[in-house]
Length: 183
Image (cartoon, rainbow, N blue to C red; front, top):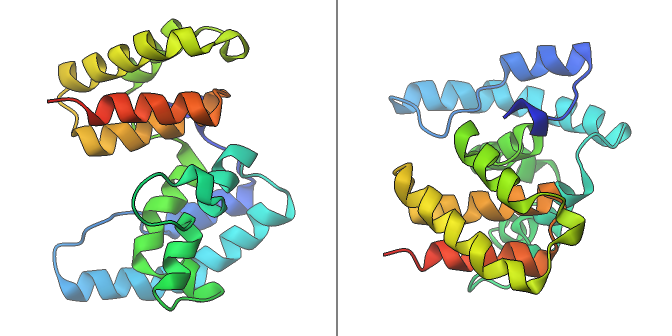
């Protein structure tokens, strides 16, 4: 949903158009070519975005704050790269960083109809209380099921959507957990 896309300058748009944002490639040769090209472009894009603080705080926290990374590994998402021996620019040029970059640029990867339905139920996020968590979690599970989404992917995407909308970290985490309980 374009509403969650960050605003890009003309030069940033030109860079994004050249960056290969795919997770998978048909063969190693194509994947390596994408890596080499991205290795040159992504640091330039990130520098520009950082200089003007274009990436919302919720997404920066999602990337660098351990509290925003639920699960067994006790590190931020950036910290996971560091635990695997990546430092500095190596993190941002690693092929697995592309999925993180997509979130920085475009927000949660959910169908527009899912986002609209979820936003309608949330309403003004400032007024969401702990009593709203169960119905929101149920809605997120129902939307995941009805749209044939993978529960693991959807759980993380609902978490991202929640924090981008302004829901508290606890509320977004609870909704994520609700989706993970889908059978």
